[in-house]
Amino acid sequence: MKHLLFLVAFFALSTASFSQSMLHDRYTVSGGLLGAVNYSGLRIAGDNPDNIRFGYEFGWSAGAWVNLPIGHALSIEPQVMYSLYDYEDLEADVLLPNGRISYISIPVLLKLHVIDDLAFSVGPQFDILHKLHRVPSPRVKDDFESTSLGLSLGIELFPREVISIYGRYTHGLSDLDARDPGDDLEYYNSNFQFGFKLRLFGDVIPADSDADGIPDKDDACPLVSGLASFQGCPDTDGDGITDADDKCPAIAGISKYDGCPIPDTDKDGVNDEVDKCINVVGVVKYNGCPIPDTDGDTVNDEMDKCPTVAGLAKYDGCPIPDTDKDGVNDENDKCPTVAGLAQFDGCPNPDRDNDGVPDDKDLCPDFKGPASNDGCPIVENAVFNAKMIQFVTGKADLTAKAKNDLKEGAKLINSADFKDFKIEVRGHTDNVGSDESNHKLSHRRADAVVAELIKNGVAASRLTAIGFGEEVPIATNETADGRTLNRRVELRPRQ
Image (cartoon, rainbow, N blue to C red; front, side, top):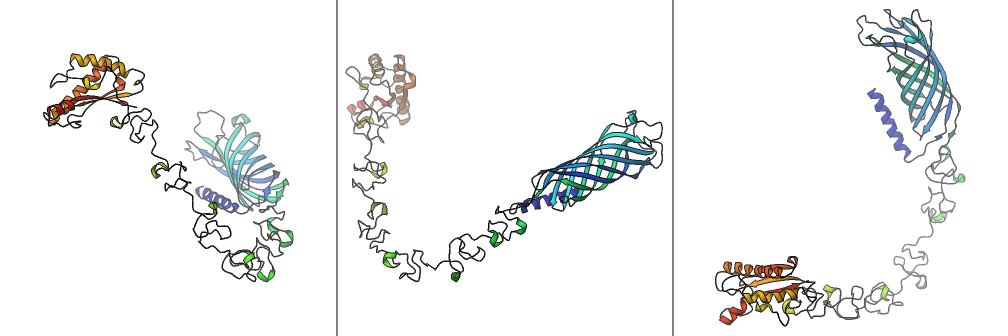
């Protein structure tokens, strides 16, 4: 069985591969009659201490078939047959010692046509009990199952012809014994069938792979559409020389040049017999020679507005212009009439809020502010200035005045002028003390200011505290006044 399945798969793959380049003859629905000889017996299974076995006897089948094509290689073929099976027991009194049973057999076969003259088949066979013949008493029809199932495997020769020959083996899958289910013996049909089929209807449509109206069997060029006058071979350029003999099949030529036109080595439309520059593309006006191009920019001097400077055809032979002379040509310059920088695609460094701080350095690009405050507005007004915020010496505790001042600061931060900003609270110290202690002190002081602003109604999500210690002085730490200036808190808005 494994070898049979391997052969079926091998021939199927071969057929599929061949069909990729050539079409096959097509087949319509067909059908007809069949007749066969059966060589059948019963196969015993189950507990068989008496070694009961059956010999094979001859019978016959006759019926009709219809074939339903599925593409070229596959088809489904249901059949209906009247089948007569003879049985003979060789040793014991069993379900059927000897006799004859007739069935209405219905095989439903999947057929694989591996080549035109060979097909394999596989499928179920349904056997419907029809009648008992010469069966000894006391056996009656009710002792046998009314329907049974088998698996049919077969081979067929000349399946596409009017008369074909086939053989198949049907392996019963259903126990035929309908008597007491307590009996351990099981009886299965086992049948070899050899016969012939007669096709009464169904047509063959000859393959025409190139669809030129000439069947492949008569077509000398079956994969290329052609003319009947050339046995199905093409003459694409219509010069009276078939493509197979034409060295230039797509271009009309003459027999002197094997179907090609007079040569034109440089492909400039001037044939070599007339061309004075046979290896250089030219024009008819110059007898096959090119129009001069002084600057070598492929724009000939007759069309070049800058004949001594290499340029582009789209600019009539001149270089790409740079209108604002900023070194960025107009094709790449997004501000072609205003001098700018290459890093900004030829535009000036942008400054959306026009505060003199370019956007790439402006932390508040949509709000004016001085460069000293990173382009952001200063958080102060007539009643509040961050310089007014003071702490108890050496501590992060705000003075009573500072707390009162921060009430005004909170009002300013929540005002229309600053409501769209987040506020960065920066703490700074002088250089008295260690770096570590100064850094911690500056951060605690920034935290204290943030806490006071939140207490006075500023949303915590808008505030960030950062301690810089002594890292960012704004005055010298060598004098008392300078150190006083360095001990500070800054409120920096950020967009």
